[in-house]
Amino acid sequence: MAYGTRRNILVVVHGPGRGRSVPTGEVFLERLRARHFELANRLRFHETGQPPPSLAGVGLVLFWLGDPLRQKYPDCFAEAAEIAQDAKRKGIPILNSPDSLSNTAKAVQSRIWAANGVPSARVNCIETPGQLIGSYAEMDSPCLLRGDETHAERNIRTIRTRAEAEAAARNISLPAALVEVRDVRAEYRAAGASPNDLYSRFHHKARAFVFRGEVKASHLFFSRDLVVGLSNSLFAREARSRRRLVRTMGFRRKLFDELIAEDLNYFRSDLPYQDVLVRAVSALGLDIAAVDYSIRPDGSPILWEANPYFCLPRGEDSVLSAERLAVGRVNASLDWMANRLWQALSVKLAS
Picture 1: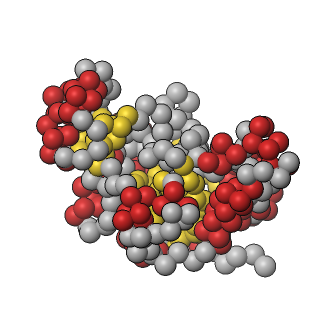
Picture 2: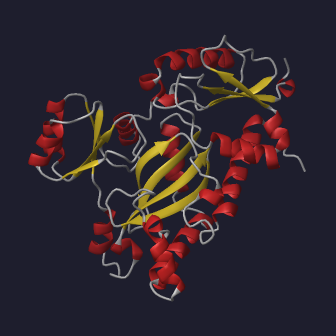
């Protein structure tokens, strides 16, 4: 079959009850159906648990499965691996192969990045309660204890003393990951940043999307907490009704305006360290990933994790949607991803 006749994209997803639905899937599909109808029409979905799919007419296979795949969903991994092998035999390109989706456990990711010189936080896998004590002593610094095979922010514990490590070991969910804390806020202070600078006042986390060598900035959150996420971000705080009321009365505007401006500027920027993000995703074998990281005082990134999905809410549902221009930003990000998908299929964009 000539390559030109392979016009469809096979998207492999979990069958019912066989794994989690991938975040943003429906948001992305809604945008495709609204603005990229021809591309949406080329998608063919295959659920794990069904007979192997035919690859006739398929020019690209995208594995849209939960991760780390081999560890969490071994049956789906085995099925996906067979589809991947069939695609390779037929010369059909693959995005986010089953093997690469198995490289995202925190400790595995950390080892791969260290071996490839990617600046990132050190992570040790904890498989028994006793390992936690020794691993903490080895790191000799504050650490975060979290799940080794999860992306969620919940149930993360900060450990600063041996006594806290011992207490955590008595009530631990395994496998766990012990993450070395890199206090980037302290680095800004040590480097002489102004006390009024956002980066020396607060902790921060940036996110960027990577698709086969191309990078797009997403968002930048600040928090008083060392572990930065949406729920504890200053944006979440400023979205509360009382904070909104205070701002309408002309109070507490300066910090709010600074946070919005920094987030918008980040989204619009061409990141100077794109090569590091691309190298990090490539080292994991992934084609598509959202990378979380912090920006050090010298402008270089230190990476926390890569998630093989561009997790975005609808713009209308984003925190401080109007102030952050979230509807336009989310749509622009989804359109960017759609265009990258077109390029991967080697189809000329419709005029």
